[in-house]
Length: 492
Image 1 (spheres, one colour):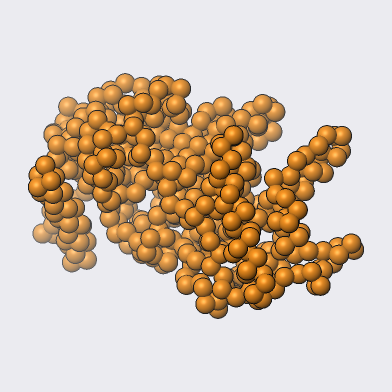
Image 2 (cartoon, helix red, strand yellow):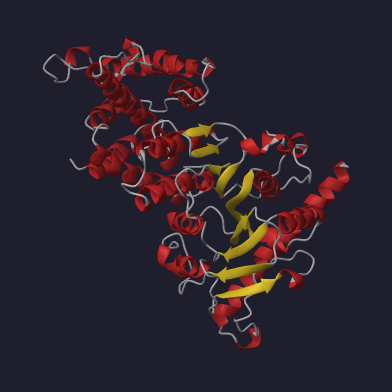
């Protein structure tokens, strides 16, 4: 059975289980089982290497909880040990009352926060087995047991299959969209940032870790066979960092990085905004930052106190955090809702004034409406800025696909290819233009394409409707800002 067929078979099996509802649940359940199979193969490989080198490898997982003991025990000739294989209620009882409590206990191993053991505890702290039927779980275990994580080719193929699962979660809508940023957008952003060996890269809202994985692949592909042993080690262990506060997104992201070849990623399950940015020093900063932080949310006053410019808009808090976390000469690319560009309320204005004064906002990419459908229709932009001095002028690029983006017609890399090609030299086209900082009034950074005919009286009906819909989005955002101001005034 081909790998994609195996995963498809697992999802079909899980859909029939009483404890599973929707793509989010079955992807979550596949993730923890895949992780434990990976961990087993990882430990077997380390043990084998130690034997060859006449050294010792101490396994993290004790005998009773190893994959080959509880999940798929084998006889001496390597065949399935039917006699000792748990199934039905005895399997679910073992998983729920013994296996999960054992793995959750690893979170108390505080000796090394970077250790695989501590990360296992973090992963399982808020994770539970949702598979109600032990017979269903047995079918899934048997299929995943046939996967070989020690095979580089199979691992590569599985990483793509897993990406498809995550994309399916995003297409499912609802809250699952927070885990997935379209890969076309991520690829374009990383190609503009051009990460290099020896640089550090950070995402404070990792989701499924798409930016970090694309950064890893970019360095690997552009410096193939050129990396020294030290650079290769640094790439795997000291390059990529991130935080994710949502338990499910955390395990998805860690699993995704592992499947792409980063064995022990520096991803931490914590809310980035709980850190007081006044405490961030140069040693804590990163060369590259790429992120699509959550927006539209509201943070409590105690969280807002961690920021010099207080606001309950998460997008403004994240933007301040990323500004503070960028090294000297570092480069950042942050996805923000359109409102950040045009809103001039006190908090928005103050953050943008600091951004323009202390950072070089050299590029703004205006993304089309529908990029994040079906879970968000808000129009977004990408702010590219360097910590190299103040902004003098901004190069804008407006992405204009020929067809309207929908759930079934998502954004493609082809839509962004011209942007990537022109960005190096800030080339001018019908979709791009330059604005001097002196021409920006009241920190309004809106992308207003001077090459577009804005005479709405002469536009076709469909384009007029598009303008109306865009205005509706802007009005909704302005109403939300007014509501926030009123709330703040009331609470104050």
